[in-house]
Amino acid sequence: MPMTDNSAGKTGAAPEGARARDRLALLTADNASVPLPAGVQAITAILLAVLLIALPWLGLGYRFLSIAITTLYTAIALYGLGLQFGQAGIMSVGHSALMGVGAYASAILSVQLGLGFWTSLPFAMALSAIVGGVIGPPTLRVGGQHYIIITFCFCALFVIVLTNGGTFTGSATGLDVGSVTPLPGINFDKLSNNYYLVLAALFLALAATYLIGNSRYGRKLRAIRENEQLARSVGINVDLHKLGVLMVSGLFAGLAGVLQLYYLRHISPTLFGAFPSLYLALMIMLGGARYLYGPLIGAVVVNFLPEVLNLDPVDSRIAYGVCLLLVILLLPGGVGAGIKNIYCAIAGESETQKQSGGSNGRA
Amino acid sequence: MAALEVRGLRKQFGGVVALNGIDLDIDTDQVVGIVGPNGSGKTTLFNVVTGVHLATGGTVSWQGQDITNIGAHRIARKRLVRTFQQAMSFPGLTVDENVRIAWEQGRRGDSRWASPGMILDFVGLAPLGRAIAGSLPFGSLRRLGLAVALGVSPELLLLDEPGAGLNDSEAQAFAAVIAQLPPQGIGVCLIDHDMDMMADLCGRLVVLDFGTKIAEGPPAEVLADPKVREVYLGPDKTAAAS
Image (spheres, rainbow over the protein chains, first blue to last red):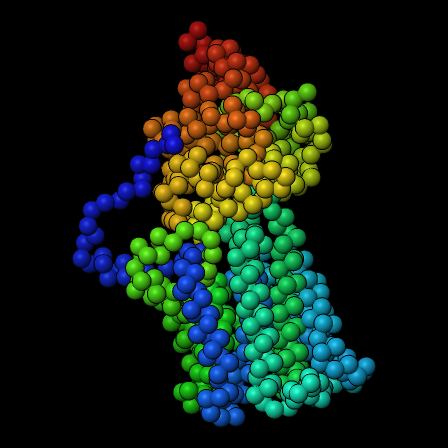
């Protein structure tokens, strides 16, 4: 129309030295909001689903499958964190406390009222969501780093309350539960069946994340992350949605917590303290919070790294630190960003540029 | 009755009186310019009208409803939309997504745009749809700011220095787009320092000084007003000029 764009065309060949820098910039760029072709997204999803479903059949052993279950329920909590941090930009370093709320709610319902896995699950998820919402209002008052400190305090407080909860919370020893109530023909005492239970929940979490990411709701969250003032000025109720996303994130954490409880069959306060929380933060940053598979990648890396490299707990902490440094320096968007950038570089910018609108897929 | 009626609007920041009883009427078929020296309260007026700041006193009513202090997002949903002095966008998102977010907000009821793409066409950003907003050059960023505001399907658009930082040809192109808005039923109220552009665009100028309205009327009349000349040129120069 009437406006001339005298800034768009930057022509002229780039000097040789700049080319390497361009290539590095391409890898480190944050292109979470650039959509991938629908075909690529579909193929990635199918391959991943097949791999995850086939995993127990690959004969990798009991220990491997146990770590895989841990990885998957952790990833479910990370998908909640991915929504609140990756989409809405609200980071938490006390997220395992929300898992703990779900796990303890379910365990207490089991011990006190005899409710099983399926019946206590909705209550536990709802309670996690409510607690997520209750610690939310401080975000409306204080932003950024201040909220992060509040989440950390909440996490510490939660552990203190659990440790001093007497027989109700089992104090420092924690609580025990039975196994998951069997469905007709499926006994969850078998490890592979427990794996499939957690995997089904992960697929739900993935689907929810994908749908939210591509919805009007997801765009509102990203608008809030990018520019709160502008978001308000186009009519987005910023305060309501910040609170809302913390509750949605709490739902995911609650689900993960209950799955953790019924996999371990025993929980204690230290499972939900500062260290597990920091590991969740580490995983989401390693994997890439803004990318669809980022949380899963983060969970896989952190859970399997000590196993693959045969590290003891102290060494593995050092390894995590090194990984985090490398990611921050080289891949600020996380490993998910790196994979997407490599794909874009191979497929050629032109191909991704040609695709129009529609699905706003993230890696 | 005008669409936007501001009555006795006051805003105090501690002891500083930024707005001291402003009265203003704007209809949705007009271009009204607000001018005044730096610190005269122009942006504060926009901020209070659009709910970014709370009013200390006075009322703002829009289409017959009192909207004083009801919150920025509620005011935007009533299709009273503003842009910001600093070119604002959702920097990490694509241009498409920036406009789509606003468009989806404006779709409550009926939007004047069938798709976000129409808005990009209108402001001339269509070729840059897949660019990341934060990487846009400044001129395009200004246009994106306008596109986002237009996306909400405004009936009155408050533009805070839309031409700031643009070169002459860009500013002229921008003015041409703004001039197309009132015939489509989008009223415009704009703040700018470019007096030639304001005189061309605006049917009416409002002059603020120290939070008070000191003149209002057709541009030629207002700019000839000795009080306005004093504010803009300083008392000595006015004396020398006259």
